[in-house]
Length: 113
Length: 114
Image (cartoon, rainbow over all chains, first blue to last red; front, top):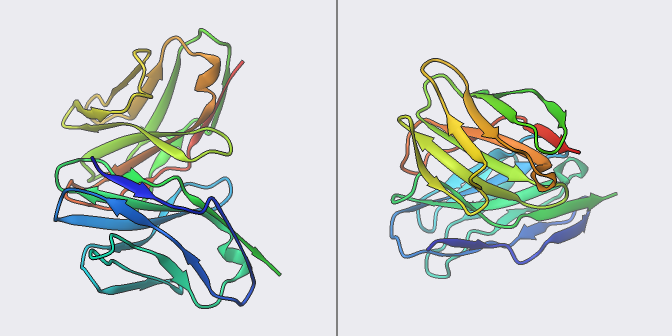
């Protein structure tokens, strides 16, 4: 079956410095879509990025991610972290066979002044 | 963006009682989902629903759980009877179609079972 792995449960970074949240996956399907969802404290998760094209950079709100099927990865990056970026980030995968999205365990990002 | 509404925002009930969580999905969406998030933990899939039927459910979707969406009304999650371990935030989500569509989440219902 499908699975998504986020290796870091907690990432702490100083404001203004770059940040990278790791996401790798396993799937037997060729046609897949990937998402990064962000969940701010006491709010609902909301989609941050979506991609289904190999080796194409996707950007939104200063964050970017590139799907690399060769390494089964979809890491989330930002060149300069902001205090307001502190939140829980979920990497997620969807394939054509399911009507569901497989979420990773989530990475809590804390941006310090 | 599209809005999913959930009613109530908070619910406190005694163990063993029945509770119904209501979701008003985005109007033209066809697929509906429930997720459970225990305080401090990750969000976990419970069930998805399409065309009046459960398509897939996880092991967290116990026999005490049921979902339905009568025509034109809310998509509901009913727990009967409730247990202490059912205390969590329950998120509803909907998507326009299958095929890797983005899911839009409601604000959640915070359920506390005493």
